[in-house]
Amino acid sequence: LALLRTLGVHTVSMSPAGELRAAHDEKMGAAVLTVVANAGDTTHDEVLAGVARAGAALARTVETLFAAWATSSGREAASDAADSPGRAQELDSK
Image (cartoon, rainbow, N blue to C red; front, side):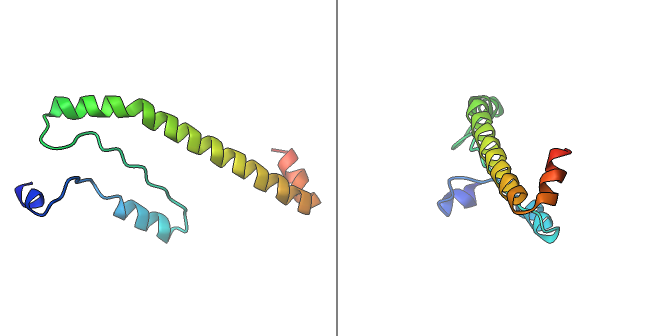
């Protein structure tokens, strides 16, 4: 940590690079949300408290993203159905 501080680093995280590479290799879309739960020198208890404080905001963010995604997906499905009668029947049967 001392070296990182000397370099001016303020935030260190576990990188999602491996997971993103795997998603890319499988032709999957991916998104990353990062929560900074502590800043500076902290104790384990302070990190846990930071995570607890961030939890509600993160939950609201994820709910909003999923709602927007569902709305967007619904519009795309309806548009696809209008363009293809067979697709409309497939959607209706689900």
